[in-house]
Length: 303
Length: 270
Image (cartoon, rainbow over all chains, first blue to last red; front, side, top):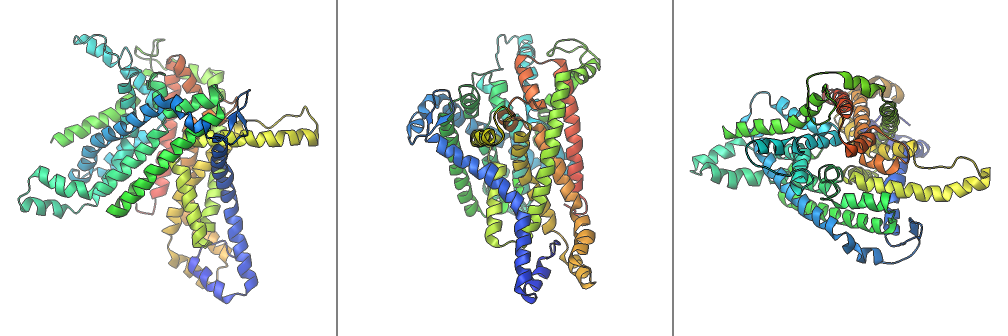
């Protein structure tokens, strides 16, 4: 019927017009949704199902996949234990450092700044908009031999190696994901009723006590959302370890690139990928549970 | 007070690396890692390097096509969702959420395997129908376009939908009351109001596709996009040429994103 999106008008029309044009309206709706549904099914759902099937298969002699039904790939996950270990240590650690670094900035922007707040906020987001690859390789300058180590050598600290160490990867992580952490925390702190802070100090609470008992609990939704976003993205990280870890500090993402593009062990790679997705789903489930407990206030800062 | 100086130093932390890249692209020396002031020669070198130019062309073509598909499919979906039932909407919410939150690496792997499995079925069929020796389907431009348009479509859906939901219904009803046929209402009332959001979605989709490395890395086959070129170059060592092209990319994507942002916020007051 109409392509204009007047929901109320459509509801009226739906009751008034005969059945034929109602089924026409339904067909138009179907037609509008068809391309995107196809895209989601063919390029998102189907590929995920194929990975699941592959992960239960066997490696064919020439690489690639041959059909089978076995759990062997999953039982073999230990072969890449180091990648899982690195990811499961550095992803939570990176998230934590991001959180600790981001919170004061978000607090400053939401509570202390009066003028030019939107400019300062935009300035936090801008780096996140520019190419992740370029921002990450910029750290090769800073952490490489002629960067910070050279400066340290000048003050007498010789032989400090930064590039290709876990610290370099951690710095890259904090740098890359800091904006994503600041934003949700800012959103929840900005909505915080400032009178609560005054009330708390009127009742004799010190600055730290007010922070611990009022500000922090009320900004929990933002903290949870930010941490979840950063953690999920970190679990699938490839570029930062590849560029700043120099093959010594590798994540599951790097193992996946190796398994799919170099050693072409697809069934095992699929099992690794499925395990990664499963771990993410667990975290998302945990997140939804936490959100249900703290209310939905923080979820608005999601994108 | 310490909050203020801490925040200032975080801003420095955020911008110093970007500033370094820009600075080093004006390097007069040949080394990628030490700086001599100042020259624009590397911009000239970068723009006359056939590999860089080809990669740039490939990236631009992929970004344009995938943004076009994402905008078209995504916008149609938003109109469809306005008329659809609750269950359809839930399905779309879940899919959109998935496409955005699933890391690029998993999307890259999944589409790689799906395409290869598809080709293994389709190519023999093509050989049978059209005779052997014909070009076969393989990974390349169109697989990257397909994979990119999937996750950028999810972004378009989110952006356009936000605008559609904030549309003033009274205007639509007024138009209908004044006997405008539905199509006329769409053309003269709805479209002008949501056009900025659609354009914003397109620009955002373009930038995301242009900047993407990991998905393209998996599905590009023998094609080289600009991020893939940069990645493989820096493994061999950073050159001032790479810094120059990076500076250009930073400037172009910032310009696009500020435009997108401006269009999204215009008249919505957000």
